[in-house]
Structures are given as C-alpha cells and as structure tokens.
Image 1: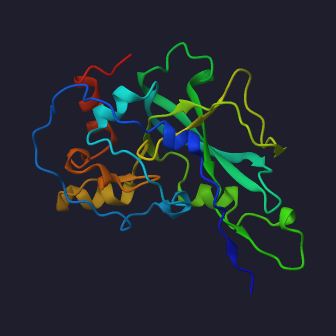
Image 2 (image 1 turned 180 degrees about the horizontal axis):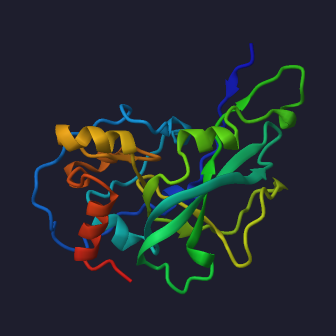
Length: 247
C-alpha cells in the first residue's frame, strides 16, 4: 500500500511574517462570541491543514489587518498548479495556487501591480506526496490534486485574506507551475490569514446562532473570542471598515 510522505519543509517566510502588533482600535462589536462549529459544514478545509505551526497569535482581526500590507475580501475564483520546488535529494515540494477575486479591497489592493484585474494569486502547500518504493522519490506525486482542492473549496466560496507578496524563492524550481498574468506575483498568508465562509454553516447559523466562518490554515478560534463575533464575511468586513480599513 502506498503511504503519504509528509514533507517537513516549512515556509519560514510565513512564520516570520506573523510578528505581533498592537491593535488598530477598540473592538467595535461588543456582542458575545458566537458558537463555533468547525468541521460540521460543507467545506473541506483538511486540504489546507498540512503542517503544525508555532506562531505569535493575533487576538483580533484588526490586529492582523494592522500588521499586514494587504487585506481583501472576495471569492475563490479557481485553483491552479503552483511551483514545484526541488529542495532536497528526496521528493519534490508541490504548491497549489488559489485565485481570489477581490470584491472588497480593504487595504493595499488598489494600484498594486501584483494584483492585476483584482485577482490575488495565493501560494499554498499541496501537502503530502505518495511514496512509491519502486519509483525514484523525485517522481512521487502529490496525494491531493488541484482538482481535489477545487472540490474541497469550490469556486464562489467567500473569503477574507491577509496576504503579503512572496519574497524571492530561494529553493531551486523544478517547475514554475501554471503561468500568471503579466505583473502578477504569488502571495503568502500568515497562519491566521485565511478566513472562509461556509455556506452550509450559514444556513445552520440562521437558527442556531453560530458563526459561518472557519479558519483556513489554522482554526478560527486560535486567536480567541475576538475572532468569534462575526456571523459571516460581510459582518467581519463591516467591522474592519469601522476600524478604518477601507480603500
């Protein structure tokens, strides 16, 4: 039986970008935290949870928004193959790219050449590769395909992202992946920098009083109660706008 081989390569740049910062302002929403039901909706966020991280925690969305150069709400526009990196003598390191179409630019979006036509290209780990004893390690393929990501997190899913432009890739590149538009750059996310709205949780929350938001790379409640006061992406966007994040 083929077994997943988990790549132990972490993006140091992502962790380094998660430094603590002071709050942009007082909480504008004094309501009590909503119930949180991760894993009980229709989105399969397991494709994003490829590594454990040790990182400084941002206790509120506005703290994270203050610390990052770009804040944008939008919808998943699609998925494509990302760079394939040759980091060691072992398996290749596969990345997948999530395209986000910005509908609400909150910070650092307008006029930024790396976001052409309001499209943000976010590089994510593609996760484990499948070990094949009779095949050289560099020919092992990812356990999850681009199509698996599309199925798990479909086009049209509402998201809020806090990306940064990717620093120069220091690892050798076996394959650059699907091409990007002119001037576009790949983006990276801090561990708390991807929030998704689960349509199934939204329907349940209409009667249960739960939030429809889930964290992408990390659980939403890893930052504490300050992240659990918003029913959906729009209410979180409205809160950030009230804190001064708007373009």
